[in-house]
Structures are given as structure tokens and as C-alpha cells.
Amino acid sequence: MTSDQGLTPAQARAAVARDWGRALDALDGLGDAADSTPTRCAGWTVTDLARHAAWGTSMEADALRRARTGTPGTAEGHEPSGGPGEVAAALRASVADLDAELGHAADLAPDAVLTIPFGAIPAPFGLCVFTMEAGVHADDLVAACGRDEPWGEDVVRATTTVLPPVFPVLAGAGGEAPPPEGTVIALRGPTVDLRFALLDGTWQSAPDEDPTASVIGTDDTAVLRFALGRTGADDPRVAFDGEAEPAAGFKRWFPGP
Image (cartoon, rainbow, N blue to C red; front, side, top):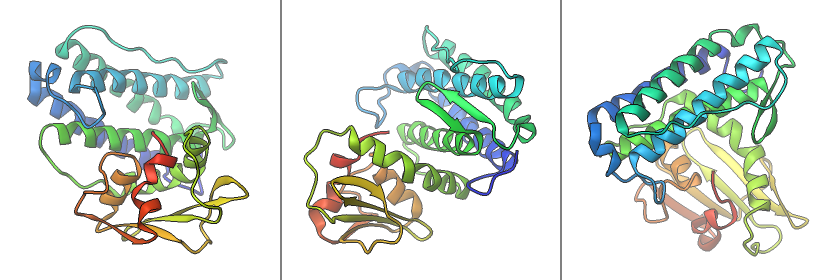
């Protein structure tokens, strides 16, 4: 499988291994304290997030396996029970399975599709989703340990590939009254430039529209953390230009992921 967008299979495999490795190191460092350590994911402890990560990585491995073997059906994940030790062991095992499947990803057909619980997606796009998930959740886990580490360039590239088609879908499910027609919100960093416009009553990715409001990060990590709801308008590494209210209220219209 080759891709003209995002990452190659080898790049995705390296990024996923690196970032889930960071996550596992964080879990090992916390031990039983993971049960009582909060994360920036509202209401979740580190153990809760690791349990979710074990489900996600096992689902991703199953999606790749089904595409490789021609097995029909939607990929399934497995959420472990037990305490911090059991959950960390399950995540370690599912990350190893995912790494093994990513090792075969280059052999997938160019038009291969991954059928995940959220729908069928082209395999190259799926590699970007899996890379983004690894990078973002590793960042969540190391942040819970009090560390602030920049995202890899590969995670930035994967995330900027995933968000343009995904955010308008999330906006459609947000339930918030939209801003005025013609609003164009830009998310900008040194290499990031994502734009979303309300046109004909619908949010759309709009890379060529001039922004009416901008969220500007001093670095790519800062602006993408803001875009994904990991930080807020009070983050000193984020500034606003143009119409400040739509920019600062970005997550009102783009909830999740």
C-alpha cells in the first residue's frame, strides 16, 4: 500500500511504536497510583484512559488484520478489566499486536479499506487516525505525570490529515447554535494551517477561505492540543486574532474527539 497523503506505513509504524511506548513508560512509572491520578480527559483516571487505549489499539490491530486476511466484518476491540497492572499488561499486548499488523500494512492493496466501529475508511487514512490516536493519548498520559513534551512531526502531519474531514462531521452533531454565516476559523501554527467555514449553514473544511477568526499557537503542539480540547483559551501558548469569541469558543462547535 502506498499513500499520497499523510504517512507511509513505515512512518506510521515508527510513530505508533514510539508514542505507545511513551504511554507504557508513564503507566509503569505510576504503578498503582494510576487508579487515582486524573487526566485532562474529564472524569477519567490514568487507568480509565489506559483501558480505553487497550480497547482502541486492539480494535486497530483487528481492523488491519481483517483487511490483510480478507476477513469480513467490523473490527472489534477488547476492554480489559482489573486494576492498573492488568490494564497496563493488556495495553502492552495490544500495542504489540498493532505493531505486528502495521508491519504488514505496506502489503495491503492500494484500495484497502479498514472497517472500524465508526465506519469504513481508506487504509492510508486509517494509518493517520491510528498515529494521531497514539500521539494524542500518549500526550494525555505523560501530561498526567506532569510532563510537557512536544508532539512528533509525524503526529502533527497525521492529525492535520485527519481533522479536515472529521471536524465538520463532529460539528454537525454538536447541537450548538452556529455563529454567523461566513465565519471562517483558522487553526495556525508554524506548519499547521487548518480552516473551517460555515457556508450555506454547514461547517466545511475551507483551506482557501480567508479567516475571520484565528487560533494561533506558538508551536504546532499548542494549537492542536487546543483544537482537540486538551487546553483552553487560557493557554499562554495560544493567541487569538480577528473575531476573538468564535476563535476562543472553537470547541463549542467542534466537540471531541
